[in-house]
Length: 511
Image (cartoon, rainbow, N blue to C red; front, side, top):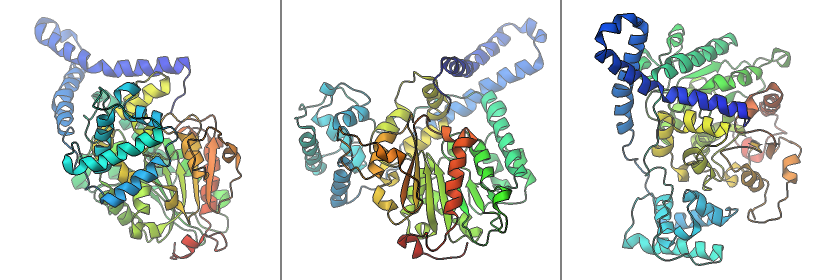
């Protein structure tokens, strides 16, 4: 993630304008060619071919995909009513500011426009997984709204105002076109660099079978150089064999971005030769999630499919226990693994970097990623290159169900877990997340104790690493920052029996 300097804003806005106007200029160029037949021979053939290709790419690829990806989401069935009520109470016990909570979920609408019927409409989606409600559900929604009024200390105006709630899985999927040159020049090149670097660092690539080679665009010809094929149906990954006799291997799940390029140096640092004297290297599996990696490919897998794919990969290498490391969106997949009995038994210590799944019921992640009008350079970068990407937008709008993805502190009990938070995170309300994890349940208190930010890392329970000056994902930018994470992982890979918590001691297995 870039910073907020003036020159960075000029740079990122220039890149966005260039990419946005590439298509209309290409289309106008093609129209001009048709009109000006006599001068066509003066224009280089390559320029003509590229302009035609860009125009056809927009008409034949983007537009059809745009309408296909607008199809309704398949919502999971709602929880039983008693479970919904428990979930409601659990959520509102951890809301720091209910006024801001409502304003956030209603896209910054004035308080006077957020009325009872608006709040019931929002709760219908968020707790019942429905667009509309009838008499059967009305009483339950009335009860929820009454409880909100009690917490607010005021009555909500009756009727319905002009406020529109943010309902990700029901709203239109927002996306912007990316020109062909973006995929061919930028994404293809970055992917090739990451591929070559990881191969140089002794990682082996496990590609999709040839029958699925064309399901990812831009194409990945370097993948054809490997003979390793993933046991999963749609998930490819990078692997370093586990040779250590005394330590646990590592499973890494990345976040939204351009794939593993951002994490390549971090992953390579996990096996420094000087640290492996007398023992073999620790194994690493770094999965690739193409739908959130700025590629044109299949839709994001649902939670059950993704969990199944990862289990196939891990078990195919004989792993029975591993350290789980995730970044950003990867924490959502970690949540799914923890909620599955079989998968959870394989998960040992955990490192969650910039997690988005903790306190997911707060509006910050959804609003900042999909609704916020960008002002600073980092906000423009997030909005155009991530939020408006076709695959990312569809994953968040049609495959992202907050009730399934939220991770509660209680679900981390009995584990060694480190959560890394950035003080300037432009996506997550890291202040609230940190206070919640540190044990301050009264998040609404105005007396904010910040001593938890400076606690010493112990590695025996729940630890928090706080970076005052970093933004989302910036911990991977410099070696000085990610080396600290590497050290945490290396400590976690040493499953000495004296270091294990009761929850981990119950689950044995070879590594």
